[in-house]
Image (cartoon, rainbow, N blue to C red; front, side):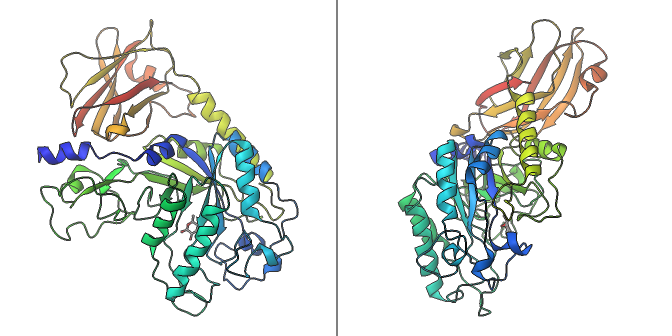
Length: 457
Ligand code: FUL
C-alpha cells in the first residue's frame, strides 16, 4: 500500500502538459455554417454558399482574447456538419465553394502569431457530410485532413477531439482510429497537446457548466484515460474490471478510494470547457454570461487544478460580438485586479512537522491585511501529492479559526476566504479580533509535500 502511494505521488506530467498548464486560459472559437443557420449541430446538407462572413477580422478576435488574459485560441476547423473552414484538397464541402473563398484557418493562425498567442484547432471526427463516413476510407480521409492542418499552418499547440459519434449521411456510424490520429500529431507537431475523453494529454472535466470536481486530480486511473501513459503498477485492490464503470461525468475519479482499485495510474489533467453564452455558436438572441459567473468559473477551473477553455463565437459578419468583447475586457480586468500582485507576507514552513503533513505559516508586518485568497501551488513537475489541507486564521491572543478546508492542490488551488463580490470581510467577522497570521496545514499527502508557492491576495 505504502509503495503504491509513493508510486502514485511520482506520476508526473510531460513537458508539453506542463507548458499547457501554464497557459491556464485559452479561447475556443466555434464558427461555421451553424453561425448562419442558427443551429448548434449542422445537418451536413447545408449549402456552401451560406458561409459568407463579410467583415472577417481575426485580429479583432485575438485582441479581445488577449484582453481577457487568454494565451491561445482553438478554432473549429471542422464541426459535425463536415464543412471545412480551410480549402481542403479532399472535399468540396468547404470555404473554397463559398462566397467567402478565403481560408479562415490561415487567417486565424496568422492573427494568433501576430498577436503572440498560440494557435490550435478542433477537428470533429463526427462528419455528417462525408460520403466516406461509416467506412474504413473515412479514417484515411480524416488523416489526410489532419495532415493538412498539422503541416500547413505553422506551430499548433493543441488538437481538440470530440468523442461524439453519430450517424453520417448514409446512416452509418464510424469507428474512429484515434491511435492513428495521435501518431500523426506526435509526428508533425510533437509539442502539441491532445484533448480527448480518454487522454492522452488532457481530458474533459465531465460538464460544460464551468466547474471542476471538489477534488480534481490530474493523476487518474488509466481505466478512465486509456490513451494516457501508465506510470505505476496496479493498486493493492486492483482487480480485472473493477473500475470499468468509470467515466468523466463521475464525481470521484482520482481520489484515494478509487486509485487503490486501479490497474495503473496516468497523468491526464482536466480542461473546463464552457461558452461565454448559452450556445457554442453565435445566436442573435443570446447574451453573454455575467461577469460574476465568469469570475466564479475562473476560480473553479484555473483555481482548481484545471485549465479554462472559454468559447466566444463570432457573428455572421466574422467579428466577435461587441457585448462579448466588453465582457472579456471586464473579465481580464477583474482577474488582474484580484490576482495582479501578491500581498507582502512572510511564509515559513514550521519546523519538526512530518514530511506528509507540513504546516506553512503566513505572517504579516503587523495586522493581516485585507486578504481575499490564499493561492497554493505544488511542484507538479515532480508529481501531485496533497490529499487534503486546512487553512486557519490565528489571532494575536493565540485563537485558531478554520477558514477553508481543501482537497487536492496540484498546479494551482485558489482558496477564496470570502465571496469575491461581498463587501464584508468574514475574516474579521469570524475571528472578531485582529488576525496575526494564517496557517496552511496539510492534513494528508501521498508522499513528502513539495510546494512550489504559498501566496496571499
Ligand atoms: C461537443 C459538441 O457536440 C459541441 O457542439 C461543441 O463543439 C462542444 C465543445 O463539444 O461535444
